[in-house]
Image (tube, rainbow, N blue to C red):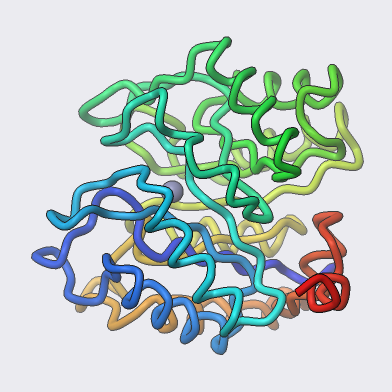
Length: 282
Ligand code: ZN
């Protein structure tokens, strides 16, 4: 079976220190947390940054600091910046793409979240996709609702995003798609039918995190874990770190005859530059 790219979403926009002391919010904490997650088996890190009050922000200097630390300490790990909407001004969300991370998230539509509209108007999506092409950043198309899948496929067909596309299905956010296996299986079958070369991953939010990851392992996709999506190890206690959540998922891989992808394998699967080429360019 294909190796599984284990992505770790280390920080996100929501959890704060008062919710869990494990969430990394400064660049130093984020780098240290990523190194531990990398050693536990993660080959991709999804990054948000926070200001001094732990609020989400788009400050390129913070993204730069985290990227530099991860690049120097986690050889070949895929770096993905978030362009997510929560707590960030529309015009600033792509303001760090000139730093040329390997990847960035690209939500391909708008959807209600529990307390706000995750707003991604058509012209904004086009502009962000154009910016990613300019800086050679591969998008991860975020699918929070089914229509966003078809829009991601359309963007790929028209050449607005690189082909083959990489899609992430996000399940378990209130007001958006619920964490139901039938929905994931249907979405994956549609993707395979309409865009056979596409790659895909899935993220379960809150208590559905591990369940969704197991469905993805079973269906041949990739997985995401981390404190952005879920701060608990199980019902009884909080997770102690991002690495602990990564280890939990890595342990599950063998149940499905999968293994966690090395950075080299992950880069090959996602058509990203090889680790050796990166090393030569430094
Ligand atoms: Zn995110």
